[in-house]
Length: 97
Image 1: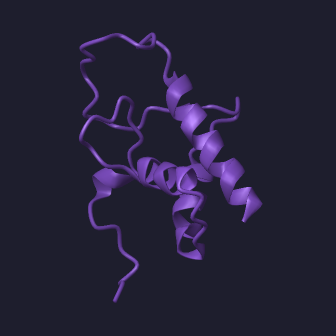
Image 2: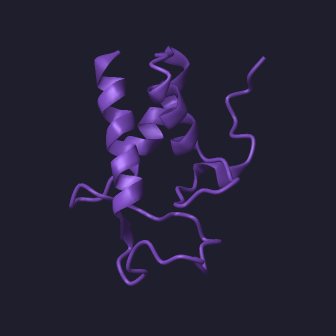
């Protein structure tokens, strides 16, 4: 039985690369890739929508991101092209269901 509460607030932070860490965007992306629509994901999809900036991109929201072993993005830019790509794929899939 679900209480509707987030198990771990860290799951609501978007990060890339995610390594072994889990976040809501990663979970939704797995479901998208599996082509497994599920109405129980509506709240998580809404969280993704709510994090979109006015410029249409998504920012890093993981406060623990302090170092990248391989620099994949300019850390002076608060928006992430990789998180944005994943978020757009998730929202596109959600719009089809």
